[in-house]
Amino acid sequence: MEKAKKEIFMEKQEKTFSRSRVRYLVLAEYNKHIKYQLKLDERKINASLERITFFQVQHSSNISNVQEMVEGLDQDKMDDNARKCNDSDVSRKRLFSLKAIIKDILLSKEGGYTTELMKDHYSDISKEELKIALLIVNNLTPYIPSKDVSCTIIHQFPFVMLANGLLEVTGYQRFTRKICPMPSVCLNALRVDGPALYHMLTSKVKDTLHIFDYDGYIIDSEEPARRHQDEVFGSVFDMKAIHKVCKSYKLDFSQSITIMHVLMTAQQIRRKT
Image (tube, rainbow, N blue to C red; front, side, top):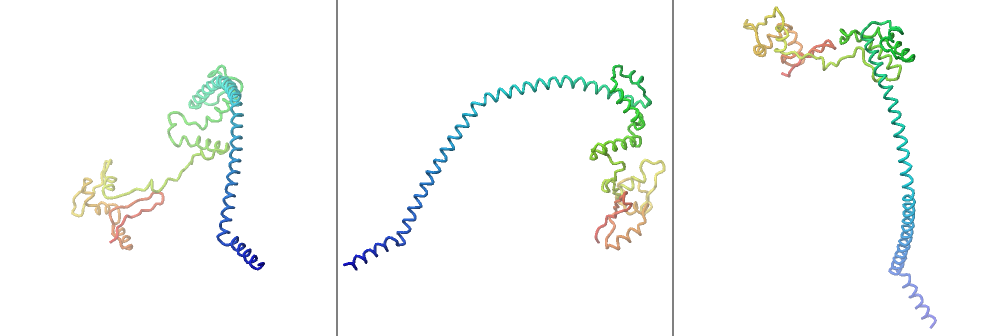
C-alpha cells in the first residue's frame, strides 16, 4: 500500500514539472509581470500628467506678470532708443558735413591748411573736430590725385599704397588691393586664325599690308582670308618651322595659334593626321 502511494506521488511530481507544465507556468508568470509593469507605467504616467498640470497652472499664473514686465522693459528700451536716435542724428549730420568739407579740400589739392582756413570753411567747428580735420587733410593731401586725373590708375597708386597700409595695421588685410595683380593666362590668351590675323594686319592703318595668295591675288576681305589661311599665316610666320614642329608630333597644322602673353609662348592648335 505504501509502495502504491509512493508511485502515485512520483507520477504527480512528474506531471507537475513536465515540459508543458513548465511552459504554462512561465507564460503565466510572464503575463503577471506584464500586468504589473503596465500598472506601474500607468502610475508613472498619471504622476507625470499631474506634474504637467501643476506647471501649467504656475505658468498661467505668472504669465500676466511676465507680460507686464516685458512691456515695461520694451517701453523703457524704446524711450532710450528714441533719445539715442535723436542724439545720433545730430552727430551723423555733423559728421557728413565734416566729411564733405574734408573731401572737397582734399580734391582741391591746395594743401597746407591751417586753423584759420579750416574755420573759414566751417565756422562752428569744435577744437577736437578741427584737430582731426587738419590731421586728415595735411596727411592725405600728398596722396590724393587731382580731379582731372583722378580716374588715371597711375595717379591712384600712392593712395592705394596708403590705404593698404592702413587696412593692414587695423587688421583688415582681406580688403587690401593688389598693387600689380598677375592676370590669368586664360583671360589674356590671344587666339589667332586666318581672319583674325588678316584684320590685325590690314585694319585701321594708313599703309595696309598687302597679303597675296599663292596665285598672286591680293587677299582684300575676310572671306578670301578664311579660304587662304596658309597664305595669311605665311605672310607673318615661317610655315616650314610650324609644319616641322607639327610633324614631330605626327600632327597637321590646323591654321590656329594661341599666343599666351604672360608665358611668352605660343600654343599651336594641331590635329592628328
